[in-house]
Amino acid sequence: MTCLYPGTFDPITNGHLDVVKRALKIFDKVIIAIAKSDHKKPYYNLEKRKKLAELATKNISNIEIITFDNLLVDLAKEFKINTVIRGLRAVSDFEYELQIGYANHALWEDIETIYLMPSLKHAFISSSIVRSIVSHGGDVSSLVPKEILPFLKDKTCM
Image (cartoon, rainbow, N blue to C red; front, side, top):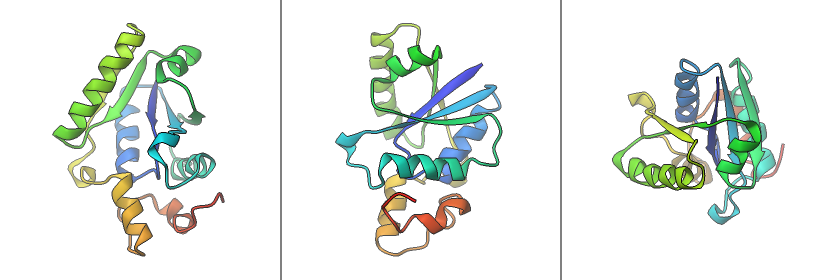
């Protein structure tokens, strides 16, 4: 069985990879679906976010990286996948994710959302924290996969 793991992944972090590895204990395949999300004003363009995710997951089997710019439920229907995974770090994440899960279910009653928690050592990591540290020249080597470190300072595509 395959699941979708949607998000902006701006950039992908060790927390994201932790959720992917947990999902692979439940599912045969995880499709990381990177949302264009122009309304969020991503730091990195869509092409770069995809390339960073590909680099970060190159040693993980049963992963596919795609991009999308439509409703998640439409993407899920297109791929004939009715299960979405989402990572939860804190109670504030849960409130937001619960609303999104209910909205998706209202749009397509067959869609299910499974919430996975990252391990405690990754629970505080967010892409916004990584972007802030990178923009101030700080060290994010413990927060992101080592494969993407050389590419984070440059916002343009690789």
